[in-house]
Image (cartoon, rainbow, N blue to C red; front, side):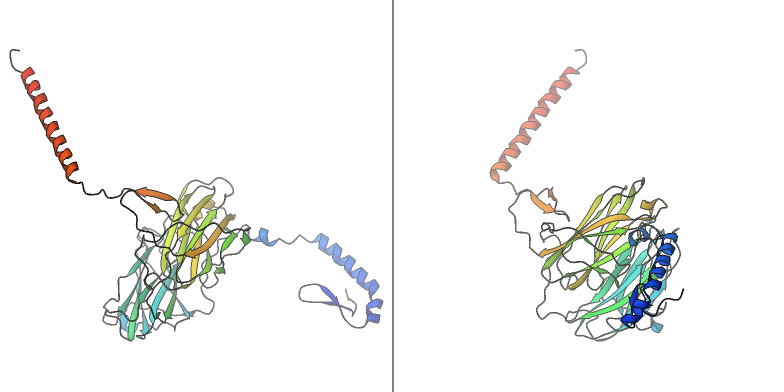
Length: 433
């Protein structure tokens, strides 16, 4: 149908008027007819799905690499290792079971450097029990800059993206303090009967100027684990990303999302020096009957340089379960400050072949890092990551002289009694009696 000149359709399908008022009045009859025909056509056409309905079913979303990532190919020999892109850029590759790949990195002597790798298996894959990745930083002569870091995939359909980094801290003694060329090494474990397909790699180099005053943190276990109060206010809707590059921003508060079996959702939240991050993911009820799935739900955390911080899992049987975590404050020995990345995962087996979404609520808050005060001798209370206290036996104080005397006397009396009883027993067993 030819619409009047006064009626123009924009990109969104809405009609706006243009031209003169006179032409608009002349086209009133045609406009009414056009609208009537449009209404009839709309009524006859099938209704469009709402966004909520469109996302309630479907395959799980795979890991999404950075859109501007540069594809490179690591080599099995260090002498031909390709250079990684400069700090702030991302590279991609793939690695098969049993492979080891080398990448060249040039570091200065004044910056802290973190070289990271993300290994992302396809959703629902079943890797072997010994499958995973190792990352390490070495000098060109093979001397390690520090111990390698190992991360394992979860088996039985629970594979999810793994990430960790190798680091070189400036101003510290060691074989890698000098500026120059280094090698970043990524090795993958054996398939061992699991999925033997290559997994994608996402590689980054992050450099930071070290603080003027070192902000080293205290040893693990000395930080108070009592979480702050739950943030007030209703839960806000959020859609988690599918990778580090598109992680959704979440701040202190409560957030609600949905997740399909086999998916991992990514969120990021700022954490500064001197503060601790507390988070909790509560997975809601799943539709239908779900058998118990070990490691069915997960809440993971990586620091601002994608280094592994903590990983918490729990069983899931289709009913609500909460997974809490607490992180140490940022520091040179715990990871740099900045955006920390939370990951929420749901095991493929929780879907029993279905792809309906499961509601998930994420609670995020930070609090000043507090040292645990020195306690007097006796039973000491420690906090679990969710703040629930549990008790451990404390070391007993050394006994004084009086206690020693009492103890020795007790042992002597007991020994004498046993001798008397033994004599009676032997006398009772004499022949002829």
